[in-house]
Image (cartoon, rainbow, N blue to C red):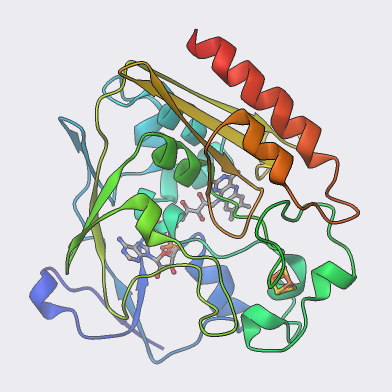
Length: 273
Ligand SMILES: Cc1cc2nc3c(=O)[nH]c(=O)nc-3n(C[C@H](O)[C@H](O)[C@H](O)COP(=O)(O)OP(=O)(O)OC[C@H]3O[C@@H](n4cnc5c(N)ncnc54)[C@H](O)[C@@H]3O)c2cc1C
Ligand code: SF4
């Protein structure tokens, strides 16, 4: 595989983007991602925080200690993965990480790989989704995306601006992707509006180095509260109200996530006051 290191957006010309490589390298190694060219985008994607604008190349480790960053996002970064991987992993790469569904990672010919079955629905699915899980029951693994969704963040890419909520789509028969980026579209930065208060709470199997089983982000602006969840649907999930959890459609072995989500939502709202 060829590795290129462009220094300007104008030099981009196809290939697989790689930033920290914490996700791309294992996927290439395991034969899930393949191509002729890896494009190291570290010289192209902005890095650092300036007045509510976060370069997509900023690492999770930088975000978790930056006082300009709202609490929900700082805490989501702090609770993610391990210090070593937070030092490598970028914000843009985190938003575009692939599912952790073990069937997908083990290359079962499931629906997200273009097949006609969801092996998780029929098989082991303790860590899977409780919403929008009909076609694919995977649970979106990004703490950071849930925090940014509650914060109503917007993205700037090499082609357009869009709300974070527009970045994601629930996969279906017509399109098995969970993101709406076009081929070759690069995320440049993330705009995070100011909020009065925000919080991120996470239920995980271990205290450290564990993906969210359920993550709950909440942010208050002008008295209104926005709630978003990680680990409950194939995409980061916006919850209209705590009562919207009544509409969950858990699988037999994901039922346990519903009361956990309820408890975390109640705690998050209490924390916002
Ligand atoms: C063991 C482990 C545990 C983890 N636990 C958690 C966790 O608990 N919570 C959590 O939120 N995350 C977790 N993660 C995910 C981790 O945070 C991400 O892997 C990391 O942030 C990805 O950043 P990166 O720069 O290394 O991405 P890369 O591996 O370089 O890229 C990831 C994807 O994003 C694309 N990409 C990268 N940058 C851009 C860009 N600017 N524009 C467009 N496309 C881009 C790449 O092409 C690729 O598809 C975990 C990862 C691992 C390996
Ligand atoms: S949950 Fe999604 S990724 Fe996992 S086996 Fe089912 S279709 Fe594939």
